[in-house]
Length: 67
Image 1 (cartoon, rainbow, N blue to C red):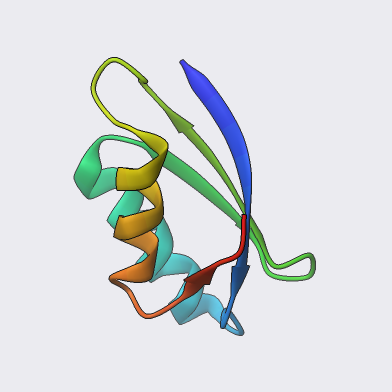
Image 2: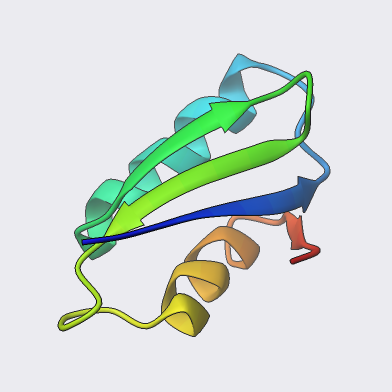
């Protein structure tokens, strides 16, 4: 399992947290959102997903991934 921390712009509320966490579940990853630090800690199986796919799933929810 791969674990990475992404800087994500545009998150401001619990709705943001739910939409990102749900998007991670949909692709088979786990995302933990930290609104205060504007980060998402993502754990995923690198044999099934790429980091680029993880970033795309977040960006599809309307947020900007900065790392």
